[in-house]
Amino acid sequence: MAKDIKQAALDYHAKPTAGKIAISLTKPAETQYDLSLAYSPGVAEPVREIAKNPQDAYKYTSKGNLVAVISNGTAILGLGDLGAAASKPVMEGKALLFKRFANVDSVDIEVNTKDQQQFIDTVRLISGTFGGINLEDIAAPDCFEIEKALIEQCDIPVFHDDQHGTAIVTAAGMINALEIQNKKLEEARIVCLGAGSAAIACMRLLISLGAKHENLFMIDRRGVIYDGREGVNSYKAEFANNTGPKTLAEAMQDADVFVGLSGANLLSETALASMADRPIVFACSNPDPEIEPELAHSVRSDLIMATGRSDYPNQVNNVLGFPFIFRGALDVRAKVINEEMKIAAVYALCELAKEPVPAEVVEACGEGELSFGPTYIIPKPVDRRLLGVVSAAVAKAAVDTGVAQLPYPEHYPLK
Ligand SMILES: O=C([O-])CC(=O)C(=O)O
Ligand SMILES: [Mg+2]
Image (cartoon, rainbow, N blue to C red; front, side, top):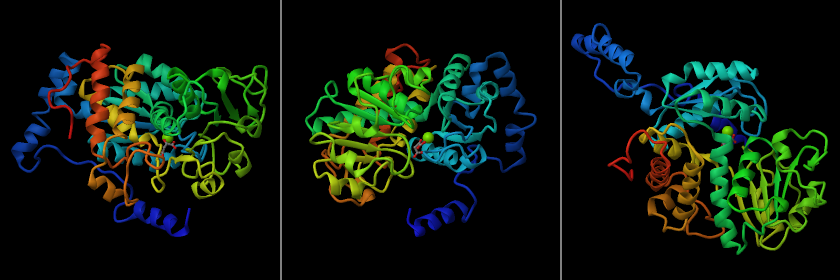
């Protein structure tokens, strides 16, 4: 990153107030009378009601619009295991995005343990406070066990953003990129660099949408994952491919699609040059992609390229997912975020990208004209229509699949 951006980012976080979020009050607290309602003695009344009927917490407290963003800092962005405390800026960042894009109140919680059970117990014990839990930046394979246990043990939606948020947005971008490049998911040769939580969830979702297991190569630090190879846990084993290629270079030969969910600068010009005609490269490692877009475009003029970043076209980042997915889930008080809700979000994103882009979005992005094509495969995070379209699709899927505890909201779609 350029030096001036680094300093600007530090200043942004430090000044004028440290951090990015604060609490604000929703009720008057000016007079003695206000205080007698907000606190003793008045507060005892909602206490008694909630003790009688726990669901009344949704009526008398902020629970229903409150999501916890929880991490242990073991896989912060593509930076690695830098510890719980260091993850706080990212978690505050997610809280900022929840509020900014979907008016979901959110607090960050950094749990300082690498012990799986301790983490699960901690989150379960505090889960009643919230309407939903967004797990973030927790390393694989622990993240899979943690999410599974918490979904079973909590009665609110628990969603590991790096898996499902990333997978939903990647799948949406991929479906559109393939359409523009005139390719089919069912036939595409797909190389996934990375075998962590996002990689595994993205490839699972692409397979459920039609990609063929035998055309898919997942690559970790040791190369292509195949049966009997060293260092293959049960999650990676799901993607074992025994058809021949063993290295990134071999797998990239004639590949249609590269999905990078690994680390900075791991895709070489030679490997990119060896891809099939009209390739698709999603270099989504944050903050630094697997290959710089300028370099990639200089190697391949027939390329569709996406990154996870805001400062290049085609930002494939879970910011397009989690705020709106939780908005929809909270508004119908969904018990879980199920597969149908995730797939509804995928297609809502795909369709929105094909609509004409409002002038204010074009202006806010400053990239000139935006219309469905190689440099605009997916909506922009600042597009207000996401709130209406994605939240509505998710809420409807929750109602249709019987996991909603409230009817489809009358005030939908949101504006
Ligand atoms: O925070 C982001 O930009 C996307 C994300 O979840 C990650 O990279 O872990
Ligand atoms: Mg993340």
